[in-house]
Amino acid sequence: MKTETLIHELAKQGQPVKRVGPPIARFFRWAAVAVLCVAVGVAVFGFRADLEYTSRSPMFLLQAALTLALGALSGLSAFILSVPDKAKPWLNIVPGTTLLLWLVVLVRALLSGENVQAGLGVACVRDILALGLPPGVLLYLMLKKAAPLNVGRVGVLAALGVAALGALGTQFICRNDDPLHILVWHYVPVLVLGGIGILLGRLLLRWERR
Amino acid sequence: MVEDVLQDTLLSVHRARHSHIPGRPVGPWLYAICEHRMTDFYRRYRRVERVEVPAPDGFDGLDVAQEADGESERGYLVREALGQLPEKQRQVIELLKIQDLSVREVAAQTGMSESAVKVTAFRGYETIRRIFGVKQK
Image (cartoon, rainbow over all chains, first blue to last red; front, side, top):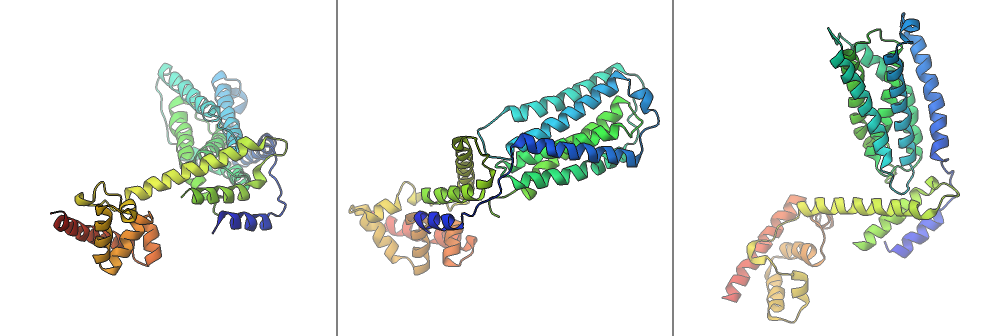
């Protein structure tokens, strides 16, 4: 087909479209629903019995802050990257740094602790998945409505964001605060889910051929 | 080739038009789509290039398209060599080397499988090399 013909065809099909809103506004809409989903999920699974005592621990608060930051920054980055715009390398660096900071905090606690035991945490992985799934579905649907160019990258950030929120919720359910347990059964699943996000992004976020 | 990228970019711009945020400059939005389509094109091009049929030794450094159009002795030899090939081999080599299509595109156009295209091209090159060898001696 000649380019002129294609332009005429596209112009003929050029019906008015509903535009996606600004990424930051869409992020806040998603974040409100995501936090609500996680809160309801934690209430359904049941808060840990020692929450009142543990919630005063600096380590607990630091980890909660880091997972919340990771969830929020990854989600925000995914929304910003879901519309074509000039390259913004900091969108990778900021969530990556938060993830690294969480690892540093855990390793430091691990090295300074004694009698560390990971324990079995299959239930924690299940909780992370269950808590992250509803906000995750919503996030992927919202991202697909835009036009992400690098679907793998956006997929990773989205998966990392919802997995981090799942880990945040799990912290309020799981009674094991041992750093090794958190590292193996909370941090690693978040990392793995983030990696799976590449496939999810490539599978679910493609829009160019639709 | 440029036409393909341009048309791909136009289609992407059309499909992504809902993602432009009103009030924001159009330039960076448009540039990001163009850049992505170019990267995508180069990635595909490199992939196709990797599975391209390598021309045999005697054919190295010979620009068939240019030689076939030229008035030189080599041009005459190329045209004559192509003319002596069986119909299928000539068609495949013309599509690959003169029209500069990829193996996949030739397969689609001729209704042959990609491996059949590669085998036919290889046999064609062998024949041309033989003809060249004889003529040049």
